[in-house]
Amino acid sequence: MLFKKKRKTLVGIVTFGNLPFTKLTVNSMRETTKNKIDFYLIVGKPGDTATIEWLEQEKIPYKVHDQNYGFPYSINDIYDYAWKDHNYDNLILAGNDIVTYPYAMDSLINLAKDSEYLVISGCQFDVRNLVDMFPETRQYFISGTHIFTAFDSKPWEVFKEYSEELAIADMQLSDIQNLCLYKKEVFDLVGYTDVGFYPAYYIDNDYARRLVNSKVKCCTLGNARFFHFWSRTIHQETGGSTSRNFENNRQYYVRKWGGDFGAETKEAAIKIDSREREMPVLEFWKNA
Image (cartoon, rainbow, N blue to C red; front, side, top):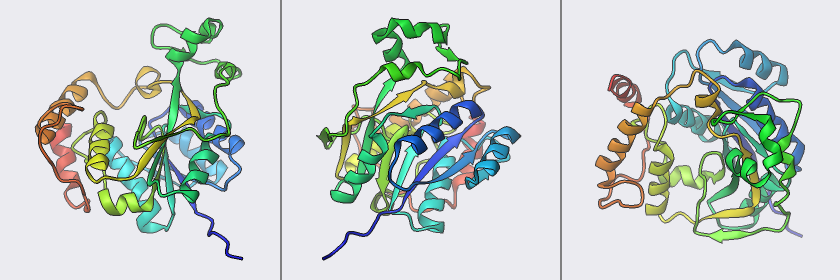
């Protein structure tokens, strides 16, 4: 009898403060996953000793940035850890302000093992959906930015629209960084993220465009649900980006692809296979 090799899965998370949310993310994954998973975190906020101390306590490997290198650079550090320094089969990129519902993680991992999909996205249910569908949960969130501090409560648990039964939307992607699995073959085809999208914004649009243009086999799992607190780095932290960064990155995307997302008119390089020029690019965009 032939047995399939167990695929090794790494969960990569970028943090910028907000340790209470990071704890929720990691713990929810541990509690809802039967498959073995490892973690690797980027501590992106300089001086974030609280996160470092917790990671040491939890024996979770991490890398500390001494300045704000931005989200794309941090993702590239995770790629290197997963596929240059180690030999993971799967990498799940996750936001540090999400909570996974039951079956989400195992659905991603099991489908990766049993299919030819190279990119498998989870399906988001965010705080704005929550308070609209379940008005009784509004008491847990403050103001229009849905600030959350009631960490002894779990209002997101009123949502039950998840299932163990796979719901595959073929050749569709709903989210590629808040909860999304990549097989190593994706890195071989598409490579690194573009650090020109500093410090955040449009990095996901750019990578999604490159995935589509490389004809990567992908899907979204409608049953693999996760709760998203929605941009806690901006709304509950000092933040690492601004509205000016958003507009700069939008303009960069338009120049690169000849149109905004969904209206692209020209081709651009699909694969970024080197990090040699990252620091000069970062310095340029930091001062833009």
